[in-house]
Image (tube, rainbow, N blue to C red; front, side, top):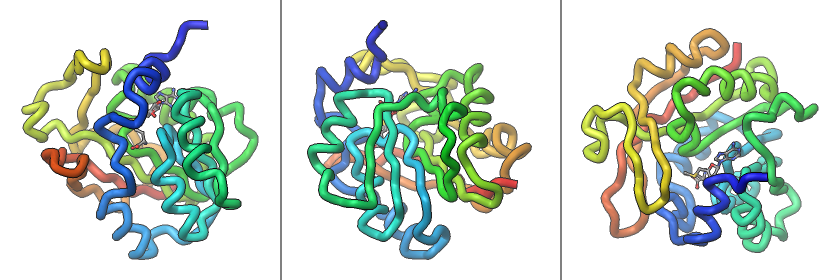
Length: 208
Ligand SMILES: C[S@@+](CC[C@H](N)C(=O)[O-])C[C@H]1O[C@@H](n2cnc3c(N)ncnc32)[C@H](O)[C@@H]1O
């Protein structure tokens, strides 16, 4: 089977990647502290090396982190294997419909902007299939307004051999509005220590 592009990325760079932050950003901590979502059965889609999953598990959430990259999941397991509220599995977010389990909270950090626009609708249907009615959904994706994109529809990162497709605020209503009540959309900033923080959209939703 052809190796997924993200498996190649993790094999080449390990955790030396722009999204591997060693911890979770302030906006995520504040949101959890605010009680917007209470400890519950949670799915982290595209969990990478597992920092967000671990943070939630330490806050009493029962978390499954899934990622397409075996290398990322191995790193997550090595780092965070001792927490009983936390599991990691290699899994494709385009195959969520095959999962029989349902979750009360599903979230993704920096996944949607990696998905080609023509595949977004299919991705969102997959999310719907694993989220309970009234379940919460958090999506955090690059904003087209960030200096890096300057309004462009897409940007190719040569070092990672990866293209990203940043979003505008109105995209969230267009993409998710049929299935979700959009509770809030706001700009948040995150990045590695010492690097410029990149602008993103944080969108908080509840399944209709
Ligand atoms: C930009 S990284 C973000 C990782 C993590 N959410 C974070 O913020 O630290 C995108 C992640 O999505 C994962 N990914 C990409 N396509 C996927 C797919 N089809 N199924 C599951 N994971 C996928 C990649 O392996 C990678 O870990």
